[in-house]
Length: 84
Length: 273
Figure 1 (spheres, one colour):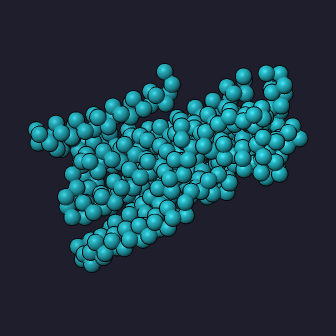
Figure 2 (figure 1 turned 90 degrees about the vertical axis):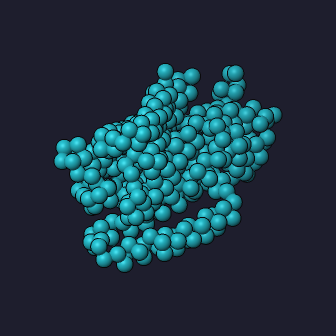
Figure 3 (figure 1 turned 135 degrees about the vertical axis):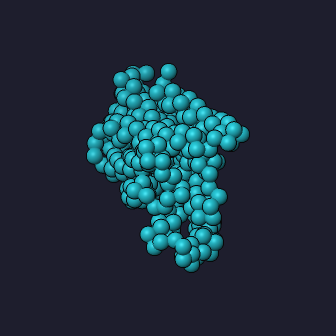
């Protein structure tokens, strides 16, 4: 999956190795929808809410502490985008 | 070499040794020797499962429903391992064949292991349902429910009823003969659902521990149901395909623990980057 929005692409790239490409795409789309946007229109302001939702979802696989750490990476993913 | 790769190689070798020993001893009619070796092998496989689950439990730092689920699975498999060690001790030290003397102390330890196992696997499945990830087609769950109902009905008719009517079997033994497959049905329902769910995660790292757990439980429960039936009709042979299936199940569950550890460690390395 490839997004023109670098934020969506970064989130997808972070999640795909963990939960597989299909579920990563689905997670980006669903969590963006919950934030009232689409993957292509995700902005920096939407990241905390998207991160929070993804944290809730992946907790089952990696536990609360690791899910929180992944959420923190997503919340700050715009920094990685602007640097890289 | 990764620990999970090493564990997978050891597991595969144990299954092969199990099969070769069975074929060899069958051919040379040294079943008594094999019964002892098989008991030790069973205990070893169950201990490997408990160890793998302990590794997974330890790697999760915060106490939450996930850590609790892994802990319950560890306690359950730990009790299975204790039961297997008791079985092996009875066979090696006291020359008691637990397939012939039923129930033994091992059966009570075994039975108590079911409760944490059922709770652990149900908690994992329930947590997944709450996660918001894809649940899959509702038709699958309908087919699964109908299949399990049919399977339970068949089990009740062909296994439970004849056992209940059998006047030679004590009430204690009857209870255990029925308890094992009944608890197995519960485990298999959750395991099949987990197998179905993990399909959605493709090659994702999270899918490996779950696939191993799900297939592991499917192997163990199928072996238990077969054991209940063949032991009751007096056609069970120690170390047969039934025991090999169960041991393969234990080893898969052990592997799940190592994969879970690697999953958590992969997140640590992502953070480091």
